[in-house]
Image: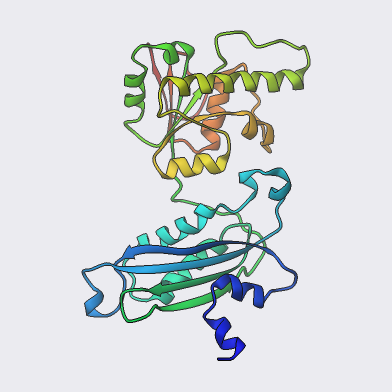
Length: 299
């Protein structure tokens, strides 16, 4: 078998390396991802599921992630599996070619993507793996991704009285009636140090809020503290409850909140707008000035 023929059956990573565009872009990959799904044009494929194997490589634009160690600087691996899930969830498909095109289109809609290799194989239709592989390239400048399927969370602010309430689990149960939920808190009851320096004080006040996030997490195992947009998006898609640690998003914001961290309810309202929240709940405090639908729950 010639080298070209051998390469045709190699993993898409090997093919991407063998046929590079100008330069050598970074790549992320998903290997040997198996999904049970109903797919196929033949009658024998209808009314039953079969195993479908995905191998995907995405070449991406340069990012500072190697230096920053920041998950928000990279194309998340979850983006690949979510593209597959979304393509499979749109409708029942007859052809692997259609499925591959839809996966590639979703991946290339991400601003970081340059080129993708998508190989899909049916494992149960014959003695071997029967499949298709496509290569698609981003056809223009970086595009903003408008994800109309992104969840719209409920953002709930908990006062210290709510955090300390004996019936905190019941309060959380009530909030979680409409998921996904992101919880916000103010600073812990002990006063934060005062420095008289605006920028330093801003960081101290944000850290005081994060201390209280962990205090809430200690009271109920559902309350998982997260700080990055990537983690928040992942948790929302999974219907998980999270507690927002604000330092990163506030300090990295292109349009930071006008409210100071000490105005914690207003800060939570700013965050709710950033997350395109469906509504806001304020437990044990006064409602903020916001155009979001807001409920105030007394204790």
